Picture 1: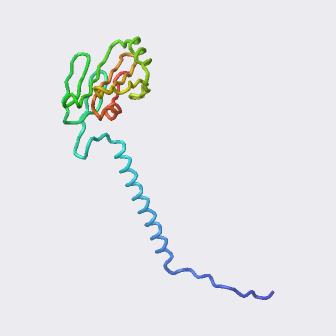
Picture 2: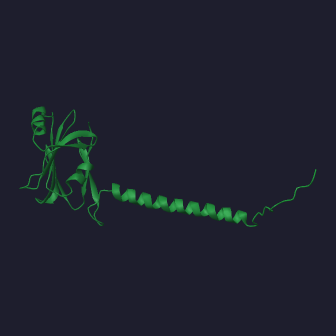
Picture 3: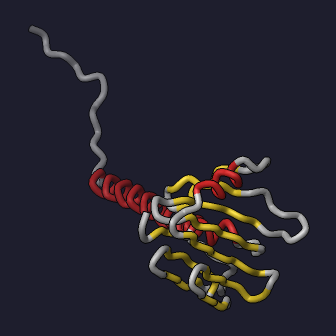
Length: 167
């Protein structure tokens, strides 16, 4: 049998291990940078923040917990808690125990009512009052009817932080 002649010679680069190590290091660096950027974006989207230097405080009582700006004052009485700095920046939480089903049903029939979810519980959001600039939301648990009322531009941000202690 005649001996075959090689058409081309296979050349293995002498630094192939260095090239593979550099490629792996480059891919790891790209993955790390992407992870840092994505986690930073997600952190800024999920954090409730009014400004770069504003901190938020936690409030909790027997019925619920929520977060509010640290510059605000808190006033509590038997059936309500109010947060704010003035009448232009106010957030009020009222609680009815046991819940008044007829009052909730009458508000739900109001025109322009939108559904809202507060800590996984379906509720209603009434249209914003043009004269006072006040927003009102209701959420009814098995034990209480919660009324959230506010004239603050942070109304929806604060409402998103509400957690019910007893559902």
